[in-house]
Image (cartoon, rainbow, N blue to C red; front, side, top):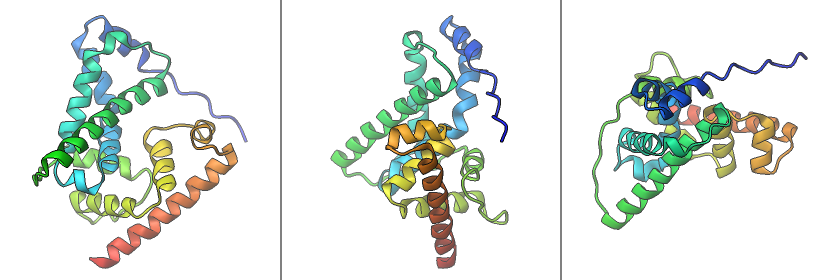
Length: 201
């Protein structure tokens, strides 16, 4: 089987220009990763925080942090930047979860960008084209919650963070073949959970 050629690193120039103060380059850099970042945040927040906090607010807050600290970032590749961006989002999720746990408030907000997030979700399952975007997103998120922790993690690592199976194996303590096998099983479990969710409606 021929080896896939690496994709050109299209973020290198954007990072350099953004670090030099080019606001348009910074906006373009973040916009490039925004759909995957929104999907990542929505899947990471869990149902309790999702009911109280706008995923869009968390994404925007994470982006502000990244832009505010961009001069400290040492660029070592597209995957490294994406990991840094998503780590900032993960910190924001933890902060907001702690806040709501302390406040015990019950606020629900709408989140924009649903169509783009749904496009990311379609990379790991196939919702009905006839479904309304928001209902489909919520169905996927409910199905995602039924998976065990490792299945959720491997789907996020592979389909949202875009890690290779070698990188996933390193993080999860699997061989590359084991990572492929586990991802296949996780996607099958998600597909089954999604069918069950659809059957409840």
